[in-house]
Image (cartoon, rainbow, N blue to C red):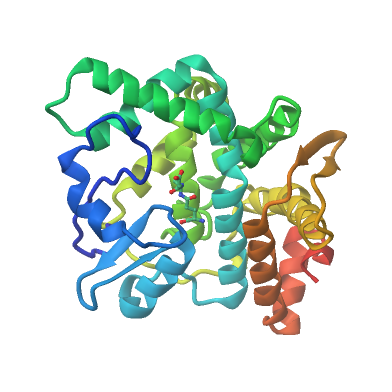
Length: 323
Ligand SMILES: N[C@@H](CCC(=O)N[C@@H](CS)C(=O)NCC(=O)O)C(=O)O
């Protein structure tokens, strides 16, 4: 919203994150009323005062806002760059969350720290410490109970952490050629990475890892936090940094195999599925929403012209998993 120079009000919301027996914070009353009936019940959600509608799902919202306010678009005009931006944004939303979940809810220190920040935001003020403690503990244990659903388990940790290492080494190299992933202005992919990396950069354990292995990520995040002063530019695959190519290769080698394995398991109604990437095993229960993500990516790839598909192939190494 800041990059697009759109004025907005930020409203914290609680969804069902406060235990039944605790008083609900008045700070969130207005947003909770607006969110009543929202499906799927996830944030971020945007209330559009023009038509009174409330919309969610960050990718859908980005496209909608670009349609209504095309001047400072985040969806690149070049179809190949747009496809690659969609692929990276999808990986940021759906795979990087596994890294963030594993660190935040898998370490006591991180869980205690961030659960207080999240709950403290929506409680606002005027609460006794005991209520704060109870709400934070409730939220942390709720999130911890969801770790297997996300695949953030001890068995999957090696692959998840390997992908984090590759991500950091790729992000470090973007600035050798450009400011953001596809050029000197941000795209949807950058905002997808921003959301996850901002969490990782402020949780104690991954922050330590990033200080050692991903120093280049900090100025990148700083620039993205408020990109209202950055001018849009045209983008093409020719301008890509080695780091951005590495990010796309990561999607091809880790994220797409995960999506394909999940898709097969959803179609066959299986209880769980497994895959192996570079000798590292990953196992999870099938996740229907990710089958939808995969279908949309393949539809977008199929809609590209042949020359554009070849350009994607040249960068990713293989497009077999997109066909
Ligand atoms: N694909 C969605 C994911 C949204 C999402 O999963 N949001 C989480 C918080 S980051 C949520 O609201 N979860 C519901 C809950 O935990 O109750 C998007 O990008 O907007």
